[in-house]
Image 1 (cartoon, helix red, strand yellow):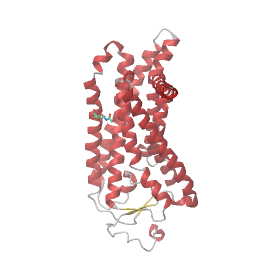
Image 2 (image 1 turned 45 degrees about the vertical axis):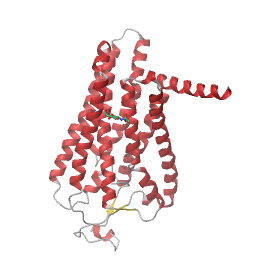
Image 3 (image 1 turned 30 degrees about the vertical axis):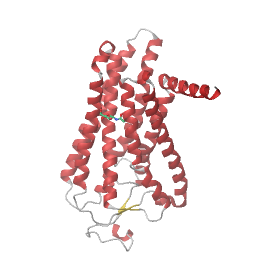
Length: 323
Ligand SMILES: *[C@@H]1O[C@H](CO)[C@@H](O)[C@H](O)[C@H]1NC(C)=O
C-alpha cells in the first residue's frame, strides 16, 4: 500500500493535517539541487532586471506611450509578482533539508500564483485584441483603443483574476487536509494541494472546470481568433515589405503567448498527460520561471522601437559621461 512509503513521523491516512506540508519538490536531485539553485538564482535575477528594464524604458520614453506598451508594462509588473510568488521559497528549499511550509504560507503562495496566472491569460487576450484592432482596423485604432478602453481591459483582467482565484483558493483552504504531509511538487499549486484534501471536492472541481474553460481556454480561443483575422489581413497586403513590417508588430506578442500557453496547457489543462511527477514539475518550472524571464527579452530584442529607445538612452549616458 502507499502507506508503506510514508516516514514514521507522518500522521496516518485519516489524521487531519494542521501543522503544514513538506514540499518534496526536487529532493530526488540530491546534491544536484545546488546546481538548480544557482541556475534559478540567475534566472530570477534576469527576470527581475529584464522586467524592471521594460517598465523603466516605457515610462521614460514618450514614443512608447501606446496601448501595446501600456499592456506590456502591466504584463511585466505581473510577471515580477508571478515569479516572486514561487522562486524565493523554492530557492530556500533547494538549500535546506527540511522543505516545510505552513498552511498559511501554502495558501499565500497559491493566492499569488493563481491570481497572477489567471490575470495573465486575460491580459494576453487583451493584448491580442489590441493587435487585432491595430492591424485589422487601423483607421479606427485610436478610438477603439482609447486610454480609457485600455485601462478598462487591464482592470477587467485583474478583476477576473483576483475575484475568481481568491474564491477558489479560499474555498480549497477551508477544507480539511489529511494523509501524508508530502506534496510532490515544488510549490503549492492547485493540482498537488487538491490531492491532500480529504473531503468531497466535486463542487470545487466544477468551479475549477468553469475557470479553466471560461477564463483560461476562453482567452486562448480569443487570441487564436484574433490571429486568424490578423494573419488573413496581413496576407491580403500587396507588398512583401508591408506584410513583413505589419507582422513584426505582433510577432513578439505571438511568441510570448505561445510560450505561456504552450507550457500552461501541459501543466493545467492536460495535467495527467505527462508520465511522471518529475515531468510535471519541469513543465511547471517552464511556466512559472522561464516564461517570465523570456518575455522582456523577446520584447526588447525583437522590437525595433524598444531597441531604439534603449540605444538612445545608452548613447545619452555615454555622451554625458564624456562631457
Ligand atoms: C495595470 O492596469 C491596471 C488597470 O488599468 C492599473 O490600475 C495598474 O496601475 C496597471 N499597473 C501597472 C504597473 O501599470
